[in-house]
Amino acid sequence: MHYKPTGICAVGIDYEIEDGKVMDVKFTGGCDGNHKGLNGLIKGMKIEEAISRLKGITCGPRNTSCPDQLARALEDYLVKKA
Image (cartoon, rainbow, N blue to C red):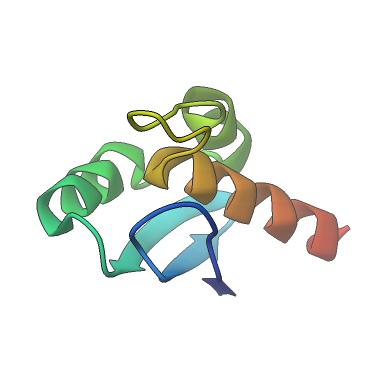
């Protein structure tokens, strides 16, 4: 799946879902090390758990962040799936 984030350095989020779990996440642009760490932390996590842990995290003066945008991407996935 692909998501176009807003308000962050990354310009794209690609992710894979399998059996209701986040299996892989790749960001295009932004902080590569942080994105790899984020992927490693949520790999295999249920979508709803990932959303609850990541939603609302901010980055500096921004009202969003890469984790928050990933949560929004996952919420979007759940809405489209329903």
